[in-house]
Image 1 (cartoon, rainbow, N blue to C red):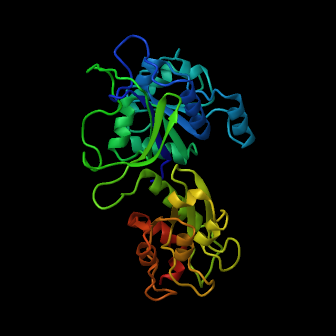
Image 2: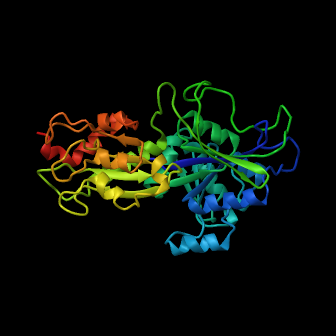
Image 3: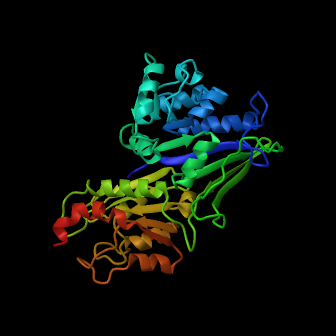
Length: 380
């Protein structure tokens, strides 16, 4: 089920607290970090907070920079990202700042809470969407992706929402602004609650960036899986699903597979996409996508290539197969849905070529049916 790229964003104290227990909000960030958050909001398609955060903080969740709003409009996007909240009970205050500022708003709730939310927000132009007897995060993310077209979702809290998404393996990135103070209160709200998380306490996230922002330190982590290597994240499923969709755009052929490919940076930004026979009658999907990027693009070293079919190890139509093109571009992570059959090349092993030179190859067989659908006429 395709999902948006889910980015969890929070500011925390040195002892992991989101706030203290006082009546006023504890400001953990400073002006420089507030501006960074504004930039991340401007890059997102939607911003989500839980109903508890709406009640406690009464946030507006706006893109404050006029220049960034203008850039969104110039790119054909609304000035403000879609604002999203979730409430299983539907207990929402219609006087909150959330409803009176910014652009479109949507509430996800349970079947039971939908009536209560609709009555409370009547006349405010808010879309209320029930997702089942209980609040179902996978249904929420699927609706955002499939119906509202959200590809990048920024989640700004609170701790309960962050905890649920991370526990269910639905978070693709964690951005923490670490403030130089200690709250020291045992009852203060914390970023993550107790319980089981994917991989258990010995599983380490991958640090992809750290830098000072004013007097706080930004740390960006990517969740990983237990054991020998990374499991598929929600982002992997999203981008591989897109690659499978692109395969359906290929001009039909009886002598070559239909394949889609997407190149994605470590921060979740799409760098390029392509499909078989896009640029000429014999071009491959990975080749078409990589050709749209400069060979010295520094983002390629930490990027992932998503391909609906295993990159080829040998081909007759070009000097270099796609596995070699990927390696020469500096990419060291590939996610695919389907190992290449012997239809055109005997004993094809693009994954072996990639792995032999240090690349990680992740195969998600649950996407094989979608990947093979445009190629059924070739598979007997």
